[in-house]
Length: 246
Image (cartoon, rainbow, N blue to C red; front, top):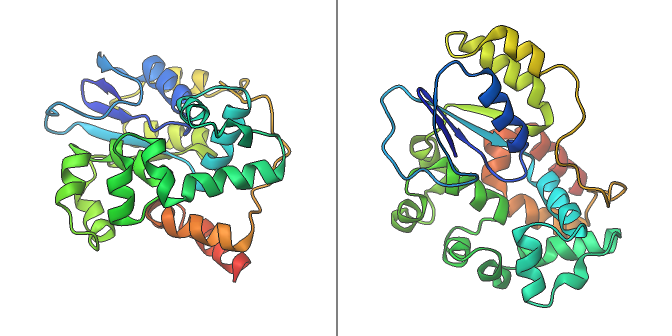
């Protein structure tokens, strides 16, 4: 979470948040108030604060997390290692699919995040949707505990604390558009200078050749578990994936 006077950025993991954070710190006109990487909102917001969240297609997030683990990095890698599951980290398509299967298995939820198990069982959501909800709503765990299991999708638009979203796949364009929609908040010269072409930040070194063409049953499970993120941000990708798997 990165809080400025007038703007709150919700920095979901593996969504280009390092780049977005650097962009905001370089281009936003008003003072920074607080920064705690990937933290939830735990304070009252001033009226009129603009909420911004970054997102990424869930399948791409799974692949990115797997590649990060191939380098022996990340909290998820260490959680799986503690459970003697780190042998899954092999730079092969089979290794990637086994990784996705582990993350989608209901019995794995308690291993992936301390509070994920009850929420996963109640709503049938996947890790990427869970990570999104932890930052997208104020007091997310208490809110999800009170929410009926069949009302997550319908209630989400009213529960979310963000108004603008940034897609990792179109990050430069989305950041430029964000600044254009709020010219009073951003220094236009700094925006253009920052968004000039530059090397990628924080790339994973291994697994670049891995395909996201998962088996049809596994892909169907992933789409079901991550449907909130797909329906909210990637409806066209969701339709394309469903058409592929039939």
